[in-house]
Image 1 (cartoon, rainbow, N blue to C red):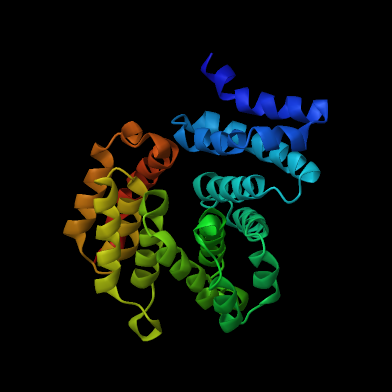
Image 2 (tube, rainbow, N blue to C red):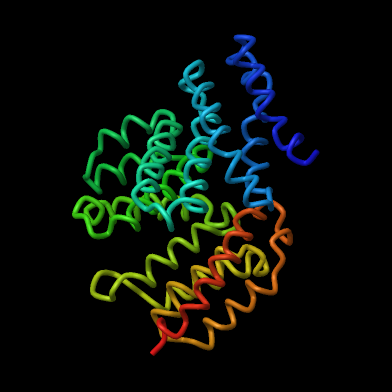
Length: 289
């Protein structure tokens, strides 16, 4: 029964395609796509989420052929491919995840409306990117955020490649714009991303452990520690880099003691982070010396 109801949004989209009323359906049911992506992150069953999301993404790509400029659909695809790559693919198949992140980034850029062409035309120029981003408003925060998430995901998997290193500053410009518009977005994930970047970089390249810790703590306070992506990144990127084993153990304990459903809208992410935290804890003897 649970699986049947989880497929209802998928069935509704399929009926729209079969009836030829895709554009009309999206116009009169603008919440349909956002409800679909919301249901994905609320799912606590990892197997169900992993098995159902690819079909939902392909179905949305089919819808997009009939409504190529639908920003809700483009944003949902950017969100979906980013989430799928991050939660289910990157650890076991980083090359495949890289392609999925790029796919997500391209959908996100397309969703940014009039700024889409400006950002694509800007190429590798940080100045041109920043000029294009200067006109980005809060109405474009969703696609901007998921573009930023997917871009950083791709870079992190390809740090051994010159092309990825060349785009570090550009991706950081996107993140700074997200923080400017609303750092609290998606449970404070922009703070987590900036904390991760500042903790990971050497000081000579702009790294700042003190500011990194401040960003992580801000993200923690925002959800009272219920969004476990924060503790996981705090432990993996800051505590290990600072060789603060006491903080590391404290963060891992927090993850272990928190129930995924304590934050309903992020139950899937929390469930995955609990698994990742166990693996990280098992590596602690190698991480601290």
